[in-house]
Image 1 (cartoon, rainbow, N blue to C red):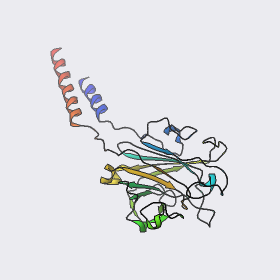
Image 2 (spheres, rainbow, N blue to C red):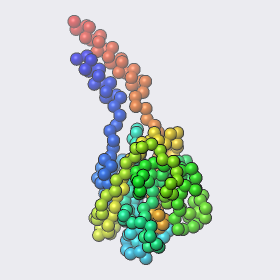
Image 3 (cartoon, rainbow, N blue to C red):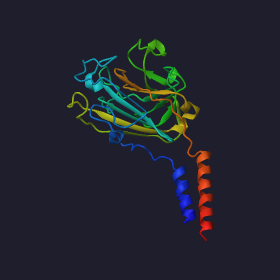
Image 4 (cartoon, rainbow, N blue to C red):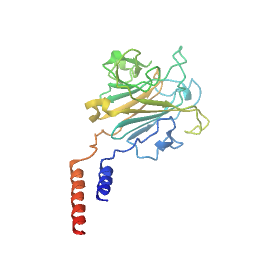
Length: 261
């Protein structure tokens, strides 16, 4: 009984939190409401202006209406993983083919919040869901619009990692994309898609202790959404103090057991 009691106490103290989300493209576990807000206490999220209409409708900084609308971005993390979720009107099956069709961009992460991106998560291709280290501007593709206030050439917004560029980190990483759905936003008949991703935070090394932003846009950069959660901390699985409490509890239980004999 004593051993079982101590084992249960120790297990409760050292147990790490289970994965917070099932990465399947269904954002029910994020608590997302039909107006794109969330009832869950996640670390950070941004709900962008909900656009509608055809390709001639302005979305900022470009045009495209619902088909190029970046609508909401959600960021959360636990002791082992970074979780991302996105809602957009942009069809994930779109490819780059001329002036009216652009593929999805990648999730880009800026540690230090200086406007430059150090990491990206691929949303298309053979490395979908994988994390890449970005060495500099030469690793990135940029949107169509200049003067966006970024540190990059002509102030353009970064949109994705170039094929064959960047350093792939690890073999993990999971990304799922939903099918089309309706009933969300100010225009309930509009079509939306959801992305969901998870990455091991160990892959970020020492950068994980820095404040960070996450960005997503499509390859043209017509609309952009950015979320900036509070600075991450790396929790200890079990402190020495807690371990001491567990040992003290074991000693007390042993003395009680001896006194009862």
